[in-house]
Image (cartoon, rainbow, N blue to C red):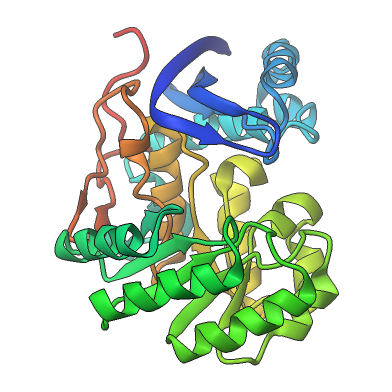
Length: 339
């Protein structure tokens, strides 16, 4: 197993609960397996995965292990590192089989593209509406608007401006744990009146009971941070979500993502696959995971433009609100780091 570090500049800073970052740092993992080369990516992101140093050390330990099972057994507490190793071996498996990665997971049904949403950050009502209108003009029929930074009344004003500017767009909002229960109840009343389809993580990740109580108020409830922090089973057991956001990097690999999506759907909960602003190998693997779960509603996979540079040409471009699913062997990323 070969482990290579990388660092890629972001187009604009990304703020997390711990820090504001200006680059994505991670590792490419290369394995020789089944007579072919497989490549995986670890893009650690605190709040969602282990930190960079823990990921580095976990990959160093895994590189000394014997084979796939031995390496993966060491990575239970390092999801980004596990993502890289799992993806590398699955990429090799699919290449050896002569099929795209999603068909390695899902069989013979061809999937050409996955619907994706645009994401609009916090801004004034006029600027928010203009950004949504720009996304609609670019072909997106689903837009997610970040809320929770401002007072609820201001966010409602923003969303009302959006609805006036784009009356037919499917509108989602992401509160990123911003609200208390009473605020969330008031928010859902207002969001239902504006025909908002879904609210993502309105309450703290730990408040699964509170999320369960918000369901059935005219706006679907999706869990994101709760799934990353407490696991899919906890969310399903609490009957806390209409939809779950599945991030392969946080879950520990595309294999775990496909399994989680199938379990969610079997429980009557819709899976939505998103990235963690990863580089091209992980981002493309997330597209394959979504394709293995197709059909899906819009997923958060249109994130390549968050990077100012990348590790290789992008085999999964976005056009008119849909992201292409690579049909070549394996993950389909054409050029490994350094070549």
